[in-house]
Length: 376
Image 1 (cartoon, helix red, strand yellow):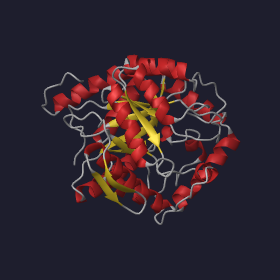
Image 2 (cartoon, helix red, strand yellow; image 1 turned 90 degrees about the vertical axis):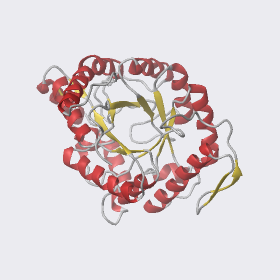
Image 3 (cartoon, helix red, strand yellow; image 1 turned 30 degrees about the vertical axis):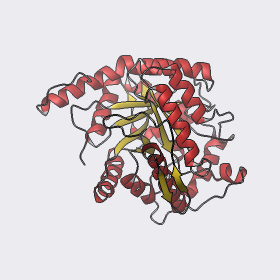
Image 4 (cartoon, helix red, strand yellow; image 1 turned 45 degrees about the vertical axis):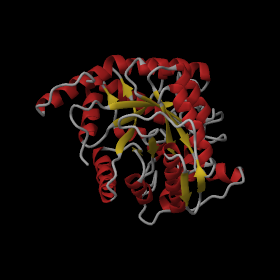
């Protein structure tokens, strides 16, 4: 398993703002909206500005600045119906979904959309969502064991006519989901994404997931994560691709971009950020090697709740493109992006930043002596 080939275009996804409060927990102005009409317009704009995927967030109850939330799978289907090419990733929680029911829903959404439905399996960090709904809260590594069974059941139901599975959390007996999802070359079933930072999460990705999402990381942190996950994947003869979270602030000058970041942090909603920090602290502390999500996050990192500032996509289009290419060299197949003012910033990214990235990819391909494909 190696870094993406130079001729393979870097893919881009955006966080769907289907949860109120925007993508930063700050009182700075965010010209974005969690409602469907806004998000339908945004999805069309994104697919016309070079975005390949959209990731619909999952929250079930008010928490840490997110007072309102649209459910992820239904919202994802609505966005699929509003677009032509965009793939939509619905975040889902094992423990709150029965995998057979979800497999059926995603199969239908996939057929309806012509093969564009995908899922992000979230093992869970917000204890109150489980206990508030009367569901048991498992210890950290047990949540990842459950996620592995969940993913295996999904894939089996999507590909087998007489699916069987016997695990500690799920049991399937001669079950057939029809219609099956859309299958094709390189896509035997809908793609399965998964995040996490712990050893349990990394091993899970190395066994069963199609994509591994990393929280925001600097170059060294991302390389360390990629190399470890690749090692686990090699042990299991498994292929996995890598996505990296980042928050984009693109301005004409680096000083302007840095001033926006300074204002975001200065106007942080301190009680909400501290509440979030308290809630997620157990994610890192509950692992034996302190590799859990947010284990080393500082207050300023958590103002963007997936450490997006750490990726450093802040500055001029040229500076952002340089960092994107360096992450590609280190193994990133996809960048998952958040923005302050979605409609304006997504369009600006497609117009001003993405062409610079594509030109740098062409240079990278030429340097490797590879013909440039039409996709770059």
